Length: 88
Image (cartoon, rainbow, N blue to C red):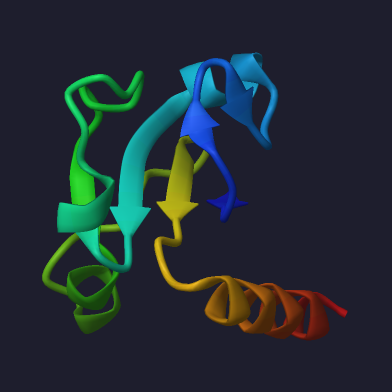
């Protein structure tokens, strides 16, 4: 699951029930998304670069991994478009 919007219990893109199932948080800039106030703060935080390079393992089948993109608005739109294009 990818999230490019708000990331708190009061403002988020995904249903709360799905966020509760997240077992791993992946970020393109982990230092920018870490917050002690986040409901996801207790979940393992993995760098996208390390995951792609094989330094970190992917979640097991059936587990939910959440990708938090912390780039600029234009980068968010381009990323979303690329994901949608690839999904088709």
